[in-house]
Length: 112
Length: 114
Image (cartoon, rainbow over all chains, first blue to last red; front, side):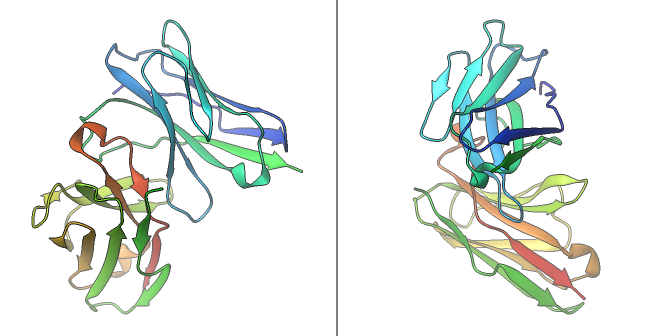
């Protein structure tokens, strides 16, 4: 699996957009980018995933660079409830059999 | 929305007790998983199941067993609890093998074995 690199922590003001970067320079052509988050003392929550096109859902947008070596998760209007650890995972779809590897992630703190 | 419900949020047990952790999902998902999460060790897969009465070992099955008698329910059993099984236990489900990276997790059970 391609390795991912994320900043250890980020801050964001409430109501502003939070842009969380992820570097995956060794990604292969059939590997998807997945984002999860984990709010303190809760289970991880799936956010979004994509292969090469930008994706948007009700929670966030995912922007993948054209060379696919990096991506950005965008929370358009961050709230205090978005404070969590955000994990970027790269994986070939259908191959993990649940064995996802969550790295250190980015601790996002949203301030009032 | 998919809901994965774990029976207990916090549990305290004694060494040697038999412990049952229950998990129920309401979206008719084929696959269910049990993990434990420990600081510095991340998420580790204990067991998973692709169908009723089917189970597969994950990375750390020792000391655990599972049961899946109905599609919506997946139980984790600690046959004889030990202090090194103190952990956060997470249940998850996914729709089918092609989407096993899109997991839906429960809120977790923080188990303390004294």
